[in-house]
Image (tube, rainbow, N blue to C red):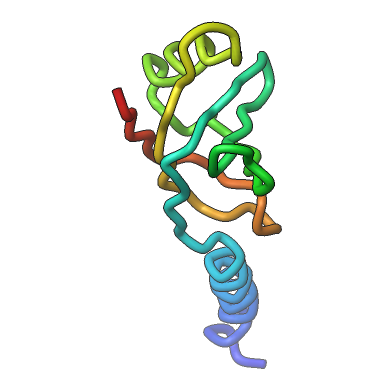
Amino acid sequence: MTRSAHWLSPVLVLLATGAAQAQRAAPVTIGPGRIICNATFCELGIGEKPRQRYRVIASRLPEEEIHRLRKCTGVGRPCIVTVDGLLQGDQTKIMATRITWQD
């Protein structure tokens, strides 16, 4: 192997890994639906009697959005949102990148 080709292998591995992660993290929009949050995660239910529920990971959202979501406990007035984000491994886990509130 030549000196220039020697460094190429790790670069190709990193590029292939990045491409595989990009394929798994497909962009999605879910909602509108009712979101209920606790200290660790939120759950978004779609429909009047939601059969389909999505776990929403809010850690990439701005702090003010996370603070507002913490008030969505399921008690009192419902929080209705649409979530834009990236699928995280399966079809029911979403890393939120944006929340649109339906006031």
